[in-house]
Image 1 (cartoon, rainbow, N blue to C red):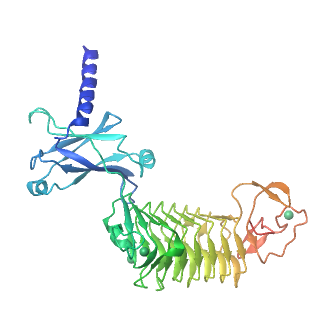
Image 2 (image 1 turned 120 degrees about the horizontal axis):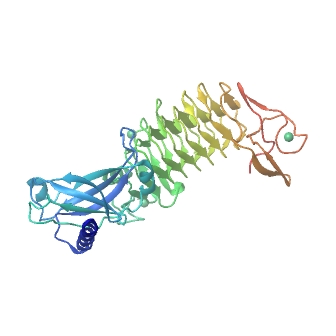
Image 3 (image 1 turned 180 degrees about the vertical axis):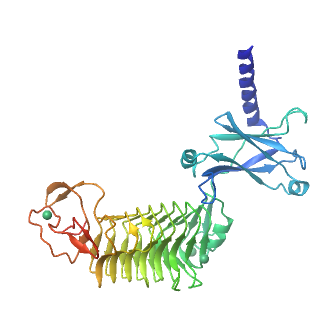
Length: 420
Ligand SMILES: [Ca+2]
Ligand SMILES: [Ca+2]
Ligand SMILES: [Ca+2]
């Protein structure tokens, strides 16, 4: 008897699912399905969001159940309803289901439509049957921006902010060659990418007292722009991550701002392969920010090259950067601790190559590493190259035999040649 029941349940599901495929007369269609990343204010790290558009079969003010299936197995349910005004314009509604952090991570920005499906139905039995629908969700959308509509005449917008406003979480914005005079506020997870790189895609502050890119959303990527003209004092930077997490700032040329790239209370971000030069104060500044990676940047001709500035800057990794011809190269001010700073080339900075307020950071690799020097292979910790290091390397392993002094701290393994 029990076996029969189980079988019939399975059969019902199968019937539903096969029926779903062909049923176009359901209550609602799924127009979109996406995973929303961690919001700092939320207790649940991720939600699966599903956008539903009512069909003509939907009735006003009736509560419908939305069953979520994950790979054809019922996982969760929630409710949705529309009033008559909403039905008149087929107004979309978003329902959402909590996900674990691990799930959210693996589904984020992926096409989840082949994993999840939904069934929208009225309360069982009372409405003369169940209407169902299977999603044909739109994939993540790509928006095109072109300032003069020359490179991309079909572009959706001529400025970046309008695209950011129109886009939904997880969308991609492609910015074509041009000069964009604007200040862009990015408050949601988006990839904002130039089509052809920073040399030909310029974003310049229209209001020099505002940031060029002001990022408050998590999981934002800003890739391939010249960013300039945020010259005002105070908390003004070319690219400013304000409490943002898991963002990527990559392949940009950041120049002629107050601070070039500024992370404030921003964690787990990647700042990579940017050219940061000729900014009025710091090139790259980390402020109350932890677990960020700053790597492969060229940081030149700023007042301070890379600055870790305030308390609670910790567990950041600063590596493989060229930091030269600034007034001060790399500085760790008070209460910046547990940062790891290694394999940087710090050269020809006018006042100081390095400064540390206290002995609280590692100015060498977290682990011993294998490297070759003059054709020989060695295993050791590796520090940074400092152009004004005066020590000697008697044993010829490429590492100075005495520490390099950095304010109140030191690099115990200074490199005697720049890192290639
Ligand atoms: Ca253009
Ligand atoms: Ca702004
Ligand atoms: Ca040595």
